[in-house]
Length: 109
Image 1 (cartoon, rainbow, N blue to C red):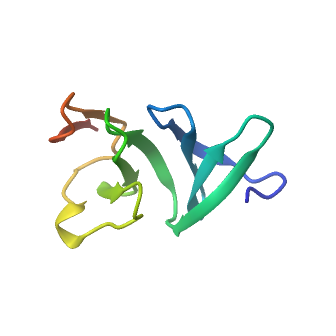
Image 2: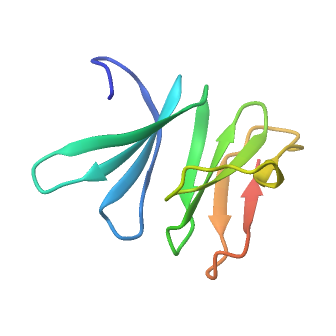
Image 3: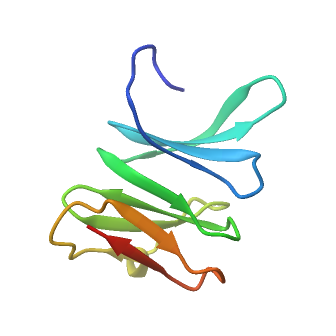
């Protein structure tokens, strides 16, 4: 759960509107949005994630970590296979944009 005074670096809302990913300085929080509350259901240890974006279908999300690494997670299993860990950006990733069919994405730095 978010600690009092803990800074939020990025937020992504699931296309369904019932879930979200919140990036803090130390971790990613996967949360359910309920009618009267927000509940954490999982967390991923990840430092300084500055950009998070869900795929249009909602089954995946991409997150960017300094200096320019991108990790793509399956939202339902919270799995990130090695072929979905991308490295090579020369600068900080400032935007992630998924293709409409979830088949890939573009990044800008």
